[in-house]
Length: 161
Image (cartoon, rainbow, N blue to C red; front, side, top):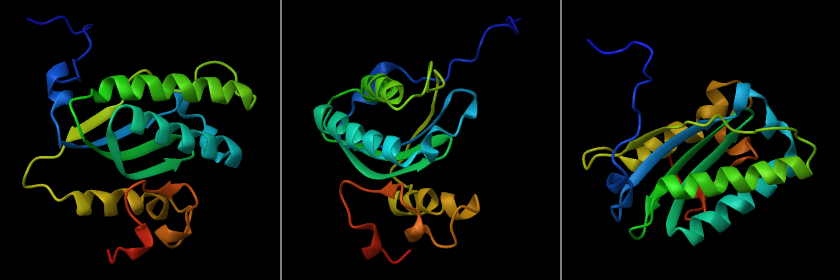
């Protein structure tokens, strides 16, 4: 019988995160679900940090959405770099940025949810789901009104969801 106090292992083997051309959906929350991403200047610093880290680790950011208390990403690997390392670096840098913006303590929850899209899963459908998140949350009426939603690969306004 397993020990109920043991936490469930949620990460795949590290090697699964190093396969080229994988598309991965990621959701990561702020610590205690604090609305840190309601601060405009901080969010834009985080977007710039995401761009830098994604370039460094050879990931394409198909779409990002900074909600007030969490972040949605859909990324695609261009090489054999590791998503775990990318997220660790991103969280570290944005925590330091947060301190410069007056946020105290840790910004991120230590864990995150990820899902590697299978061959039969539609990345465009996943992108639409992420884009509609601010609408479902009641922050805007139309996804293209939300200021903290974007892509480093596409002009999202060109998509006919």
